[in-house]
Length: 425
Ligand code: RNT
Ligand code: ZN
Image: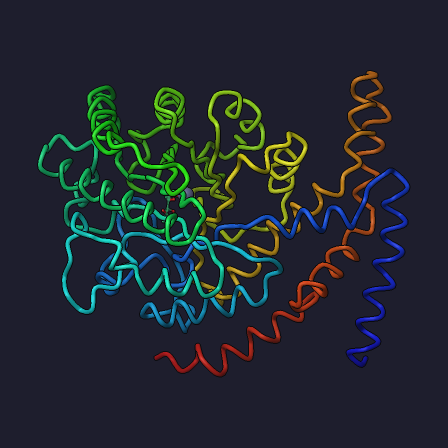
């Protein structure tokens, strides 16, 4: 089929879909306009299996692991930026990038993590400015000799704690710099791996130590127009199966008491526990949330995001609750067994598709039925809207945003693989 008739078909399908959605009162044009304003924060670490540039040959540590050795991973910042450019070009809309401390560019010099400065990220800032990507940031409290004991900010060793406190303070300042330079607040998210493989006798002291460390890190107030602090919990990790210092209760309490953002990672809870149900509760008590959208599979918390029921439920909660301006949507997964650019594109497109599905709900009608106690009609409607012509709206959005429609993006990725990734040996 020629490009012209393909385009005409997509437009014709959209016109029909628009009419169909108008029946229950949904305005598809308005939904697409809203979707175009939402920036998802892509995670730089999918591009190189969380290696970073400090010691790319070093072993990944800290209860996170990648499996697979798909060829073509980015070996330096230029390659990573090039891969990211390719990914963004296949995703509709304008999006952000989340960096990690270990992605500093130090011109071959060894710079300790507690000495990192904004200048070590200047190439990232130039790149982001050029492309209108906001930046988010993360201290890297893993894959480092001072994290080998399994403890960082909650270590019994004061010198170890101090090193990581200094690293986190340095990262907040870098985040503030990003926010100021780019005119959009940087969410600086703190996650630490601290925990025990086997049953501890003292669950209390490491938490007291972590609380003190956090107080030291956040002591200096930074302008929220430039930097927003977030804290991320976890239930268990590889090697910290029995006890994680920074649990959900720990950080929920900390976020409420100290007015910082709570980061909810969808892979960090019990396998049957979902974060979609937490949003409306947590947002009663904290101003803003950071999401790490991920996909847990058995013991892994970091599979590529698919258009699952839970992803849809998360986005429904955000849209139905009117929380779009209070929830920062970031991604967090790493799969080294498939094309890494495709992993970004597939996961991000799915996050956007779930958002669009949520924006296309006849929410007034749904709510009316619930308030009236008509649960029969509520169920019927919820099932009925699953069959609405959503795909036609999504295709049209991709077309209008100038990115490939449908599987078209895989042609670009295959070509990029041949031209660029395959040559990285
Ligand atoms: C780890 C956390 C954390 C990391 C990244 C690399 O369990 O989810 O967010 O995945 O910071
Ligand atoms: Zn995470």
